[in-house]
Length: 133
Image 1 (cartoon, one colour):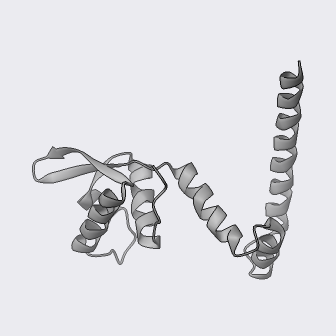
Image 2 (cartoon, rainbow, N blue to C red):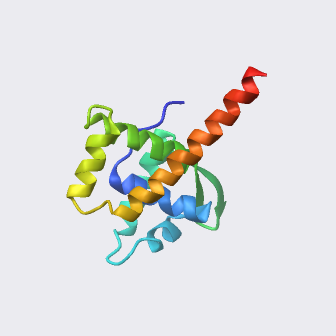
């Protein structure tokens, strides 16, 4: 199934579910910082997410339906990242420059990123060596 298009509020609700695994609408609402959206707002969005195929009801406890996410955090992050990169012509460098200009990217972040890239390159080299044998 294709990944559904998700709004900022959709993502915040899914974050609550990814953190809890399964939750009722009330538990999802309580995961929001103050001032929290109204219960009815969360309820409406949860039902819309159910229609989109992003979550499902797994059981009922008393009057409360319990929901769980159907989309994974990693897949959702990758889709969102692809959408963001499309604004930068599909290239990471202009996006990184924009983050730096906005004060959202520090030298420590860049150093950590370099470590991650080196680690991934080493893993890819190892995998290529295994495949060539």
